[in-house]
Length: 207
Image (cartoon, rainbow, N blue to C red; front, top):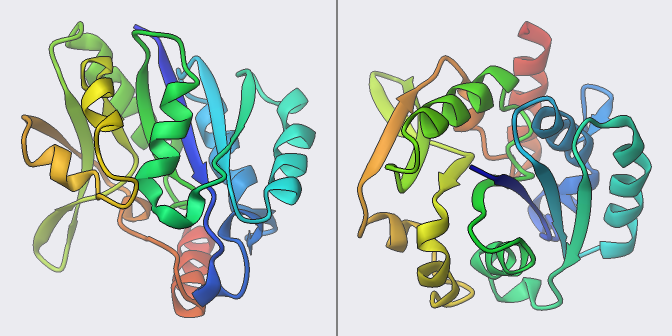
């Protein structure tokens, strides 16, 4: 099993006031938080997919790379405005054939390392029998699916056929999904607005 973490860091973050990858939370940028979490897990490499502010995000990623325990590659998605799935396609296309991917949006920087360990552990233990593994967290009495999402290499070509703005959930609907319950509110915390950022800061402080 070879797993590449696709860190989706291409968005402009207009509602947040600037690129999410460069936004600070708890003293670190989102890109630094996500890369550090990925590198501390069992992924084989980190692929940072850039778009808006590509030069700045790439510089931050390269500066952090020597401090991490996983190799880092940077892929620029020049069509980042067309949709997030285009970034998944650009990142996965750069990986070796047969590579499974952990799709990790940079706007979920509150995800804990223990969550990645749980997802990768379940996926690896299944020995290639799983197609999609997602974390879920119970909020307000309802268990909801979150990010990051593990996708089997068997789905690569199907993902490549999606439209750049076609949500991955359209793919998920067609396949069996294993939900892994986690004690991690970060899997649901998609930071899009200043209010979301305040929630993230509170979450990080509680930890």
